[in-house]
Image: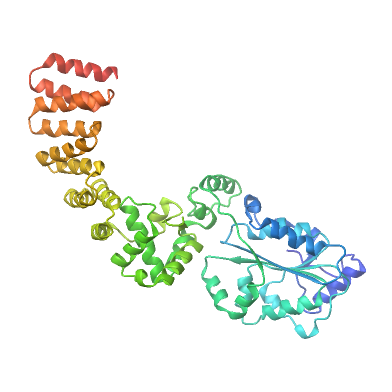
Length: 479
């Protein structure tokens, strides 16, 4: 930012009086310029152009600017705009493009909190002329929590002194300082008068494009992954820092989400997350509704959670690995989920848990218990019968596995996978003739099921039907 020197720049008499008026209320020369000479390059890096059109409340914003620029103004006009969003999403750039650039004749006064702390309010007289003034408070949170600034009083004095006044500010959400801002009574009272302008969330595709642009400008910091919108804006390290500074309940919910993700439930219903938080991590959300709502809002405001209405999820799967309690290993708690899911009569979650126990941890006995609980709730859940048989096969319990496949086939006779696996179990028991019949049923449903052709050939070879076995292999190669 360039400081004006009243003795080296040629100014109109009206503007000279305004500048003298401003500097008369500061111990040092403040940062003020005509809006038309307020350079965007001094405000923000070029790649933040991406966010200029992502501001919401466009109609209300245009109406406020129209009131300020009305030529037939009979009464003083005061407008207050608050651009809210996470750090580094382009709030300052948006203020320039959407506001300052359109108020060409206004004077922009952009003091630091240190400069404003030196303000001598007793000397403030009515502003000369009818030129408009923009008080630009970048990171208004710093002004509100400063012990040397009574911002509400300062703004009220400007309102009484200016014919056209725009107070425009940015507020960093999702950071510790925001809590202090809201806790300050004069901060709450001040901000409730502002038109709040939020930013639309960028998509994962947009985040990828932004990441590529950022690299060209040398702006990619350690921790950017190029996939997650939040990490492109903030960096994964910043996200971890936010989580560490949240309360016990928020961290418990983040662990519950990570645990459910490990159980192959990446988009759980809110009520399920609440039950797991209470049942595994000793929260008390079921009896304290308001704490639950506050907790979800806190995680959402910190970009650690996407609120989908009835369900929630992390902004990106990488968050579970790099952000959501990186040191927390959910393996030990997985089996504790079975009782919670069963108590909720949730067959789908029990089935997903069983899959997780098999695929990620090789815990077949525990998986079978989870499938059994799912089948108790929903006896016609074909997938649970099939995966139960698969787990029994891996334990060498082929007779039991065949019974599970038989139940799956009873429910869904055209399940080629169940017929194929039934054949595999029979083959392992040396019942090759029966196995061949099961493989034939699988092939009849799915002619291109290569594994069925192969294992049918193996069984034929074992019982001496070599020519037929060779034909199976030739068919396999043709396909």
